[in-house]
Image 1 (tube, rainbow, N blue to C red):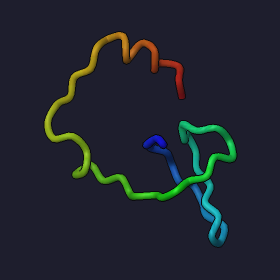
Image 2: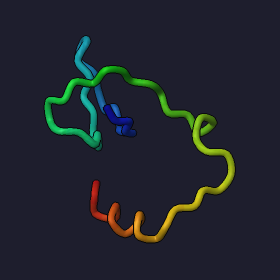
Image 3: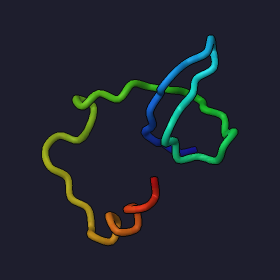
Length: 59
């Protein structure tokens, strides 16, 4: 199981449509939660340069 942030551009009844989800098409979504900046990291974050490089063209 993974955790991924994505956009929720629209809903159709009980169907949700997402963009930018890091999953294989058709993968079941077990739950959705809102993202609020207050739930994100407090203060600055650091990551190695290689992580930025490999993720540059990921989305």
